[in-house]
Length: 108
Image 1 (tube, rainbow, N blue to C red):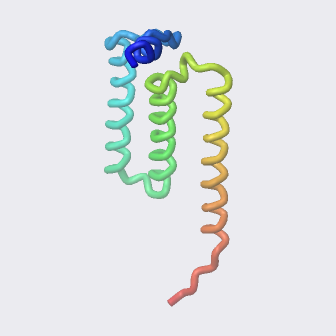
Image 2 (cartoon, rainbow, N blue to C red; image 1 turned 90 degrees about the horizontal axis):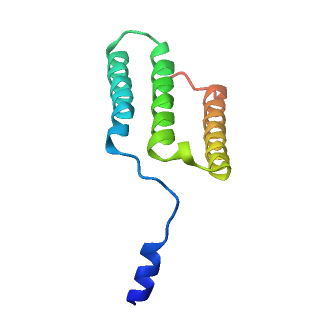
């Protein structure tokens, strides 16, 4: 059993572990975006509040994916999977909003 364990843990995966200090700028960007999101939440932008909030959330998601999920060092197949997932999410939103917009609600 110990020979198997040594083989599994000795295997090199080719990922360099970045120093902890390299995560501080990413954290600062996310903290600033969270503060902006909080400001947008309390502001009076009307229907534009939703658009601005979704844009900020998309930027936060991109920052998290690129830096913390190692997409910066990922191969092309991983980027293809990320693109396919984003396209699928876009389709889900478009079809859901299409259904919502085209319904006729009864006036009570």
